[in-house]
Image 1: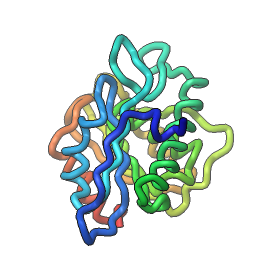
Image 2 (image 1 turned 120 degrees about the horizontal axis):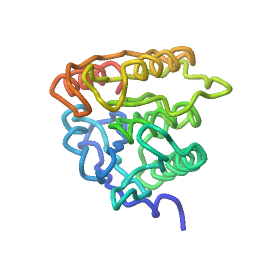
Image 3 (image 1 turned 180 degrees about the vertical axis):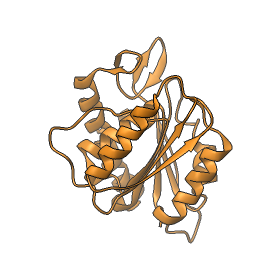
Image 4 (image 1 turned 90 degrees about the vertical axis):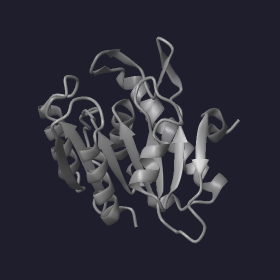
Length: 209
């Protein structure tokens, strides 16, 4: 069985006549494949949407990879799940006929963390990313080549889960790897607000086409 069929997912093609990029939507802990569809439509109304459900369960709540404690990731599982998700994107491009070179991830919390991991481990799969409340997934021994990729890191100054230093380090790590990074600060906590969506929509206008 192919990887593409092992992820429960939603795919919504781009509106007729549109040739925009595909937005890969990655939910937070406890979410599902439907959660970020409204966000995707608000941020990128002319794009196709691919939204897989995380395959790891934590107390019954879907996630994309295991963690040992709050903010402590199971690194072995993270690597395996990152490759699994990257393979799913590649196979989905063939299945649904979208351009594999124009996939941009938009992830929240756990979904943002695995999107950041994909940039570091499988950079060929993503053209860019919107990382909403993300942490540094790991520090790679060898920096990937992220030249030509644009990334938005949207952080909350009142986030009790992701310290400001984590957001700043993630942005720096991606810049050190060659990405063009925008670090957006919201006064909110570990939730999305209108400022985050406005920043993502504005960023998309420059990166999504």
